[in-house]
Image (tube, rainbow, N blue to C red; front, top):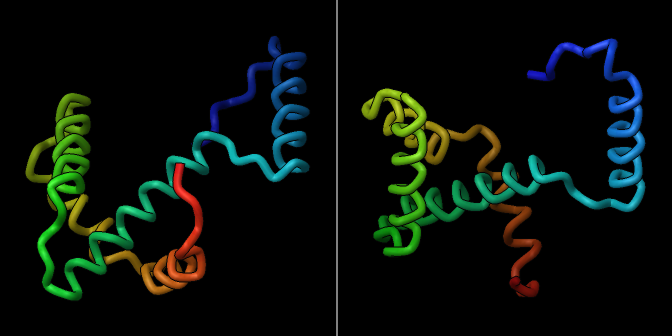
Length: 111
């Protein structure tokens, strides 16, 4: 949820708006877009492994364990965290769209 605009920071708000417009014009993602794409990619991989009844790789298990640990450290209930992770990873309504996007990008370069 966006913050309430602070009228005393109008100059800073305008500068941020210009910066974001520049990113948009140059097709450069903000950090939040990258974060969302990473989460979506993990969901695609988990859903694919789940559909094929294949175990998650040790690396992916570490990512999911670290995610749970971060959320618990931020004060969230452990069982609720696990349930929400399962829902976000296995019950996404957009998983087919994400899977197509990933398959379309297959063969691309990595970092």
